[in-house]
Image (cartoon, rainbow, N blue to C red; front, side, top):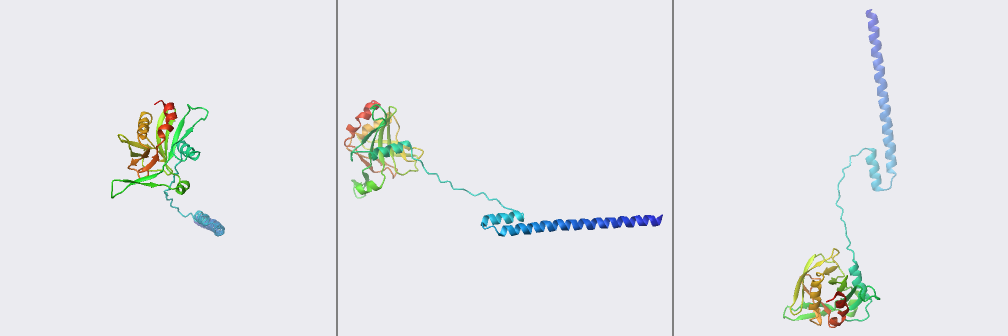
Length: 252
């Protein structure tokens, strides 16, 4: 009986030893397959020409931990020019007379339709530090042709009076102070549109008051805390005549 038990014990031990040996062989084969697969994948990675794609291939092969970094993307927003801007510069490009204001109708066959007067700046006035005089810095014909200049636009749209300065370049200021010479002078806060290309006063009665003040002089010089506006001057000599259709349309 004791011999039989001993024989069973030896057989069990031998079976367990065979089981362990077979497991190790299988594990070695799996490891070999994995290693061979990595080697083969590595060889594929070395043939990739793109630097980033090759690096990604190695990371995936060897399970390299990747640290994702959130990068700040700089968004560049290009200001868009509104219909008001296009209306002003189109009106000036089609003018026939070189001086004064140019009248444009939305519908040439309907004199009661929307209309606007436009005039391009004639230059910039600046103060002489040594005196109280204002010196004009006119723009030459060559400069005018090669450069877009600010435009003053007076309009009657939907029977509402409006005054706007249309700029060739956008400004950052949302609100600026403007003084219009007259008797008496008129000082107001004007605002820019979302694009920064249009500076406008209040509509309706406020705009009418501004236009009436402009009629007091043959030359209009804007004073402002904005460098883009300060000193701009316009020829208003014939404005009282040019503005008659607009006054009639907006009934003032």
